[in-house]
Image (tube, rainbow, N blue to C red; front, side):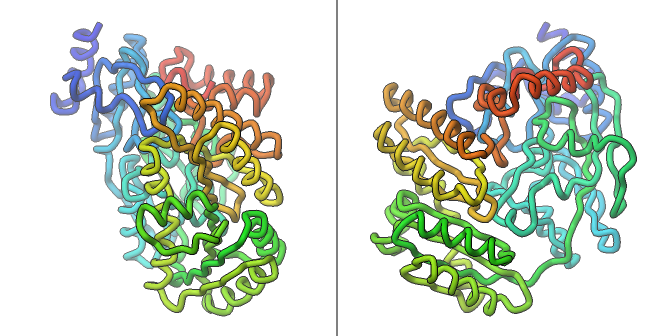
Length: 456
């Protein structure tokens, strides 16, 4: 089969686009998730054109070979993991920004464009592409679309799904379909564009995207507020949102994360700080907005409120948050990062619950959160070489997801389901929901060759 597969692929692809050396293909076998199985691909294909992607899918359909689409493999749920004998379809070579229109406020891009590269390119036109995952210097727009990813700015600007206006998608049988629009409005037919956003490559291969842009906002100013308890910090978040404030960023770090960052980078945060809240405004008068927000933090029990005076100070204050995941990884060498999202009003209960779970399993679990939208990132630190600790890590991870559902939340706010959370997706949406999602999958992918084994 492998020789036949390569022969068929070679009929429509240049030789350099097909990789079959097992030592090389093995490096494409998985993303960054823990506890997710990965198979051995038969071949890795790196197309540069839509026509080449169509050829791959026609070949896969003819030979009944599974196809696993990939971007930069920065995902955290196993959604890009290979299956045995599959074609890994890496889209990183399709990395052109095809159009930037300041009048229409859109960008047209290929899936391999890196998020940060797009942000910089539109910035030169006075425009802004808001979704900014923490991996934005590496992750691709195609991957962002596949997992409906978010970022630090979600509280004000929303997530990827709100900026994808239209798509070109190669279907499982190789046909090319256009969805959506490039206009400011449009409601013609079912919203198939939104259906593909977050579908993790299970319905089709995104080969082009029309993305909405915004005018570039002023540089934001940041405030840091220290609290003697996580409950007080979460109370401050509720007061901020209830008061109608719209910060461009509202992030929270618990004491475990603070101590990990202190140990990793000598940030000098006080040992008595149980929670750190970071808020920012990119309004015409951010200092005034920060002052009002600072008063709310003090009313909620902040022990210290430190507003930045300029952009440089703001970046220093944000450094601790940006180092969080790296610092937590340094604690034990391996991390398992959750992304449970709960209603903002239940954020305090979520943090308290995670602390109980950490004590129960004898593990270090730090939480940093996009507090403004209730999206928490409990990060389980463990030694992957220790079987018992690995078991406890997985059990604690599952218990955290269960806690999120109990609090009226969802098992994933931006990382996707992939392999890691298949069982939990079924629990969240129920049997009827699973049945209808399977029916949609069957319509678009009747042979089941697109990213099999993911989602459900």
